[in-house]
Length: 257
Image (tube, rainbow, N blue to C red; front, side, top):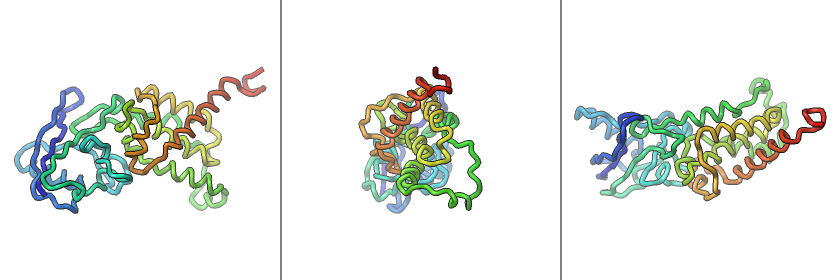
C-alpha cells in the first residue's frame, strides 16, 4: 500500500501548527496504525528530519494514550478500537489520511499529536478513589456484591481515560469520562462513604478544567473504544442531583434544624 499522510506538526504549545504532507510507501496491511507511524519516523530520522511526536504505551488498547484524530474521527472511527488496534488493512491503497491531535480547550497541544490530558488527572484527584481499607485480593471474595451492581461497576471501570469522548463532542464535554468513574465507585460498597462528596468534587473539577456541557448527541458513545454507554451519564446526573439535595437540605442533626 502507498499512502499520503497529512500530519499535524507543532513544535510546542506556543507555536502555531500546520499540516505537513508525507508519503508512506510499502505499507503492509497487517501493520497497526502506530507501527506505520514508527516506520515513517524511522525514514524521517534517516533523512535527518525530526520524527513525529505521538503518545503510546501498551499498544494493546488498554492505556488510552494513543489519542489522535484520523480523517476527522477519534481513534479512526472503528467501533470499539483504539489507534494502536487500528490496522492499515482498513484503508485503501493510494488513500490520503489526515492525522491530528485531540481538539479541545481542556486538552492543549504540547507537540505534534501529543496533548496535555492532565485535566483528567485533576478530575480523578478530586474524587475518583476510595479511602477505606479494602484489604488484599483474597478479601474481595468475602464481601458479597450483587450481580447487577458488579456488572455495572465492571462496565464503567472499562473506561481507559483516553479522551475520545471529549474530542468527538461538539462541546468538548467530559461527561462520559466522569460518569464512568463516578458510576464505577458508586456501584460498589467500598465507594459509599464518599459517594456524595465524590460526585460533587469531580463535577466541580470537570467544570473548572474548561470542559463543555453535555447535550446528549451520542458522539461520545460512538467513538469510545470501550463502548461506554450513555446510560452512565444518566447515572451521573442522578448521583449529582442527590448529592446537591443532601448538601442543600441536610438531615436534622447534620447541619439542619
